[in-house]
Length: 193
Image (tube, rainbow, N blue to C red; front, top):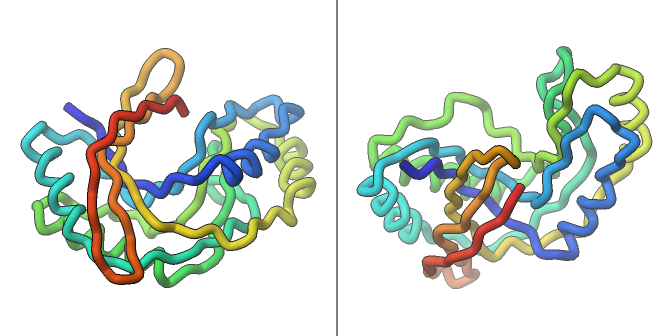
């Protein structure tokens, strides 16, 4: 059964900027190989639901927008850090897209995510880091910020866990438009991350 999530992918120049944050002096980090912004985790579904999700997402009509990446942090807060992330500046258009996606999925009787939406890009998974190590890393990169990044599409991905980590396959891409027309294309593109 496919394990699905909906995400915004980034062009190679933004991928390169994020790669510059992969500081291998942070010994406890397992760095992500391809960066994306997860808008909604769906989970495992059967093939019929998979096809329904692909079709209902194609009905979303939203204009393109821009986002700015800014700052770093970790999850969970106030506990042993397990995930290192890059933040997203507050963005109403991104939140509006998230609401539209949630509404469409609820129409298919899929349960909404109970967690508060905290848009971020995972940089690394951390394995028992010291407070000093994480503090030094966050201090070193605290001023990280990108220029506004155009967001003209979002994608439906499937994820397969292998012994080498997660393998993500882009299953469909949905275009955003200033004319509020959305198209979707099935794609065959696999990524490791």
